[in-house]
Length: 230
Image (cartoon, rainbow, N blue to C red; front, side):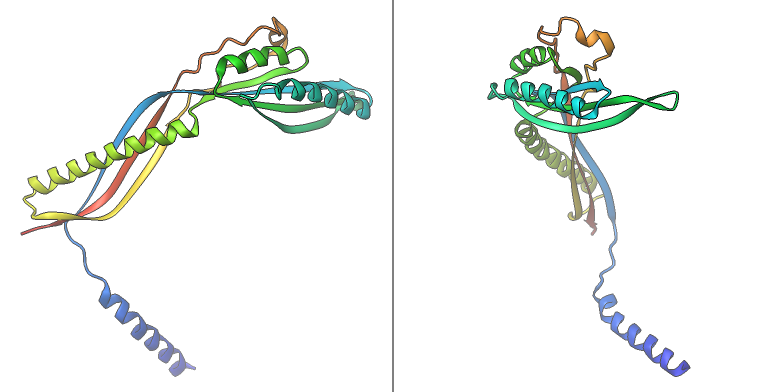
């Protein structure tokens, strides 16, 4: 058995030799990074409302939730500028003293629009039967892509300037890029509204007061250059 093991090792070593021979050693490697950022006004509003209830009979409860959600969908779909979708539907038992008291259920209605006044007005109307669960703002995909593309150009130019400075100060004849990574990131504001108990029922038909704020969009370029030394 020993000769066979030795033979396999030798063959594996021989096969690996050409690959090792092809690898060229690298010297004078420098890792550097550049970053550009820009604050951008949030142009998209997201609202999540819930239809909820509690009944002793599960079938009656489901009928109530379905009726409230159908009413809300019919109202929301009249607004062509608002994107409408339904979310999670949950049902669970309500127990008291280890005995089943009844059932509770809730279903989400999710709204999205770049027309903030229209969605704010619709949200107020929907609170006749639904409750606002959360609200947030974001930068639309079109705006984010446009800003990111501009920042990528600036970050790449900044990377080149830094590489030129390093090469010049180290008296290199030039450099070449070994690897390059481009990353994007958008820091959005936290949820600005969350319903709490009776507060959500006050002035339910009034438009919701909103302030979209800004998101910070950042682009980072990082990479390695190899200096060509005299």
